[in-house]
Image (cartoon, rainbow, N blue to C red; front, side, top):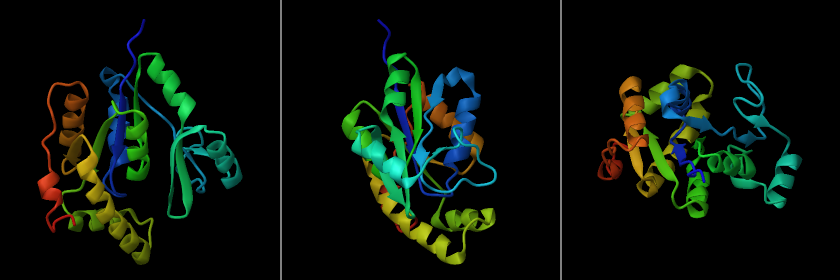
Length: 202
């Protein structure tokens, strides 16, 4: 009988580089991890691919999946639904493969309740100042939207203490390397809970 795979869950405020980190983890085949594609009701952006970036769907179809118990978790963020189809994750884990979810803290904590053995990883920026800079540089949000994201980030940082590991994305390569080592059980990421309680983040 095959051993079940490990479920890794990654979260962090918008602008911390979660998507880039996940891409790096998937590029390295030694990590033996499969990214579960979430479903969302938000509009597809020009650089995104349906079924790869997200599974894009309508609000009605998403609500039907919720009613039918097909979602492992879901959350409403900036007026859009985001969620993880349950069956796809369970099938991959049963095959003995590791699964990586990139989801919001609300969803991550729901997953932890269903899969207590799930490994929760939280990504933080070097500082709030750096986070604001990154959000501004990517040019996707208005000043008001950036302000809203920074406010949301403070709440997300408070949830970080409920995660198994916390990583600082200052140097991308170093951050990815530390996550890879942790996923393989070779080292444990340094806890930054005390740091998260300081004004630097909250």
